[in-house]
Image 1 (tube, rainbow, N blue to C red):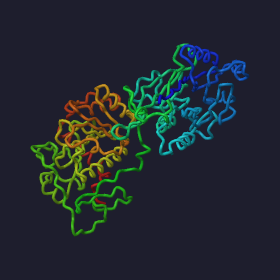
Image 2: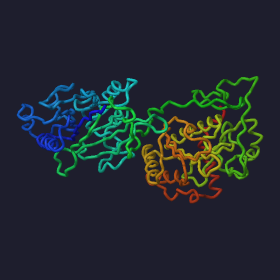
Image 3: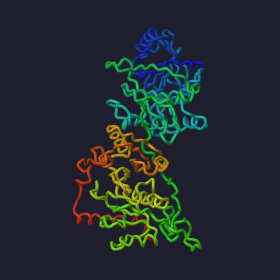
Image 4: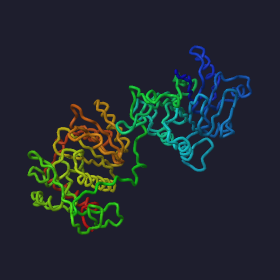
Length: 559
C-alpha cells in the first residue's frame, strides 16, 4: 500500500506581515500545487497597526491554507491570545495553545510549546517553565510504545543545537536559545523541529537519536530555523516539507539514516544522570586485602569482599598478573621503571623505593593491583598515569580486581582535582603500546566546559577523519572492544566516553594534541611529551609535592 505524504509549509516570524506571507503562499501553491497546512513559529503578531489583522479577523480577507500558530513571546502581543487552550483566531488561522499535542486525521502528531523560556515565578503569560516541559514529556514519553513525534514547534531555538553540526552563522548556539527546549527535543525525538526568533535561516544537518553500538537504530531529527517574513536580506522564511506520519511507517523505512547524519547535539554533560550513581565494582579480591569502603560515611575498614574482616576457612588466593615477554617501562617490578615518579600504590600505603624490587614477594602477600605515577613530560605538573602493577596491555584485558582499583583511583582523582578547581579527563591509546597507561589530565574549570572539551575531541577527530563514537557514560569498554583490538577512548569528567576503533593508523599524540590545543589548555607546544621533559631533580620535587597534596584523599591509608 502506498502511503500518502502530507505536504506542509513552515514559516518563521510573521510579525504582522500577513499579506506578504499569504501572497507568497498563494504563489507557491500556484506553482507547486496545494499544501495541507502551514505551521508558524516565532512572533505571529508584530508592532504594526492592527488594520491588516482586522481584515482577516473580520473575514474580509482569508488565509489560503489551514494555518496553525504559536502563542505570544512578549507582553505586547499577549492581548491577541485570550484562550491559553487555543482557539480559532480567524478563518483558517488557529492558535494551537500554550502547550500540547495536535493530532491530525492522518495521524500526524505535532507537539507545540508557545512562548520563551522563563526561570522566574510567577511565569509570565508569554513564557513557559520547566513544569510545562515536564508535563509534555510525561504526557508523551510515559507510554512503552513511544518512539518519538513527527513535528515539534517552538519559538526559541534549542540551546547547543549547533554542536557537532554545520555552522549556524552568527548565532552562537552555546549562548542563545533555550536549554529547556533542548531537553524537550532530546526526549521527544521529533522528526522535524521548527523554530524562529533569531531572524535568520539555519537548516542543521540531521542528527541521530540513538547511541551507535549501544542502542537500536532510531529515526533522525531535522532542525530548521526560519527567518522573519519579508526580511530585506531575503533570508529564507518559508520551508516546504513532505512527511508520512510516523505511526503509518514501516520501522525499517523510518530508521533509515541520512548520509550526512551527525551526533546528537544535546548529549553534552549528562550531569544529572551521573550524580550519586556509581557502578558497583566487582568484589573478587584476596581476603587479606583491606581498603576504605568509599560508600560508607565513616570510612570504616572492611575486607575486599565487602564483609567485615573475619577469618575465613577458605581465603581466596590472589590471581597472579600476566608476565611481560621482555623489559617493560611500566611493570613496577621492572628495573626500567623510573620509580621516583611513582606517587601512590593501591591497597597499601606508599612503599619506600627499596620495596619496589621486592614486588614479586609482596604481590603474593598483599595483592597489589595498581599504582599512580607522574607522567614523564606531562602536560601539567599534576598530569598522572593510572597503571596496573602487573603486565596488562589495555583496560579490556584487566582482571576484575584490577578494574575495581582503577575505578577507585578514577573516583578519588576526580574528587582531588575538583577540590583544586579542576576537572580531570582520562584517555587510553591501545595502539603501539605494550602496557596500559591510563592518562589523567586535569583541566582548570576556568579554561572551558566539559562540552567544550567533548566538542574539541569530536571536531579534531572529524578533521583527521577519525570516527569518534559516543558511548554511554557507565558502559564497559569490554563490551565494545575485544582483547588485542586496537582502540582509543577518552572519558570526560561526567562519565561520558568517546571511542574509536583503530583499523590501520592512528596519530600517537592525538589525545595530548586535543587537550593542549587553544580550545582547552592553550599549550600547543606541549603536544609532544618529548618537548616537555625536565630534570630528574625537578621530577622528584613534583612527585614529592603531589604525594603531600594527595595524601588527604588517599583511599589506601588506614584511619
